[in-house]
Structure formats: structure tokens, C-alpha cells
Length: 159
Image 1 (tube, one colour):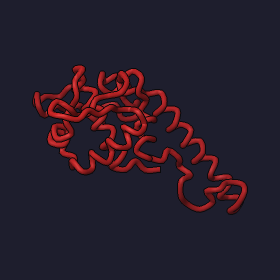
Image 2 (cartoon, rainbow, N blue to C red):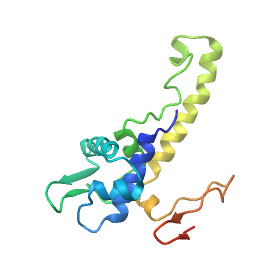
Image 3 (cartoon, one colour):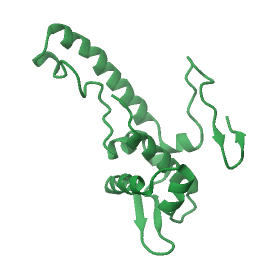
Image 4 (cartoon, rainbow, N blue to C red):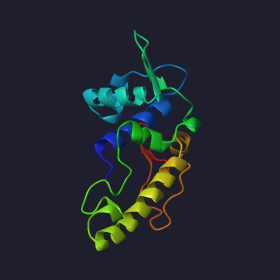
């Protein structure tokens, strides 16, 4: 299980859309410039997000993209699933089919990965886009000061 740039960029783009929400549409060019993500890459991600009914699109001079639902209704797991991020620690590797093949040791060790997959699923299902934009995520108790929130537009730490 590994979060790729698809998942990371989809999260950044959806967060940017949620922060820009003012009832209007946001142009992909603006998101691309602000977030330093290739416009071509964003277009590919937004096709998948649109297909998953997470965003809507409008053509024309005042067109662009906006969230299809309120940030309270969008779970992070849905965003990652929409861009085909696997949330399964058993996705690859020896003995992935558990008890039906592989060795006993592989099957027993897979219980660890099954549990990890379940924890990741539950965690990501429990977080909404609104939790991200409102900075409502509790810091990890093991490393509470690992990340600070920085806004380059305001040049200050927002933690």
C-alpha cells in the first residue's frame, strides 16, 4: 500500500476547490498554477473525480470545476478511490491470496496486512473534506509537531 502522486494531487486539488468555493467555478489553470501541478495531470484526475460525482464541470468563460457536494459530504476515502488508489496492504507481494495459497507463514503474516488495510480504510472513511479545510484533524500523538501549515500567500505559519 503506497499513496501515489495521483492520490496526493487529487487531495490537494480537491482541497483547493473546497477552499475556493464561493458558489462559482474554479478554472483548472488557476489550480495548476497555485498548486504547481501539471494541467494535463489535473485534467486526468478531474475526469476521474467527475466520473465519481465528486465534482461538476461547466464550460465557457466563467466555467471550470466545483465540488458536487458540500465538503461535509465528501469522504477522503471516496476521493482516493475515485483516482484508483488502492487501500489494500495485500495489493501485491507473496502470499496475497491468504489461506488459499502460499505458505502458512505468508497466510499468518497476511493477518497483519489485513488489519492495517482495515485501519487505513476506517481512518480515511471517517475523515471528510471539511475536516481537511477546517484543519480539524488531530495531530498524531507520536509526532504532534511533525507538520506545520504554511500559507505562501500569507507567508505565515497557520498551525
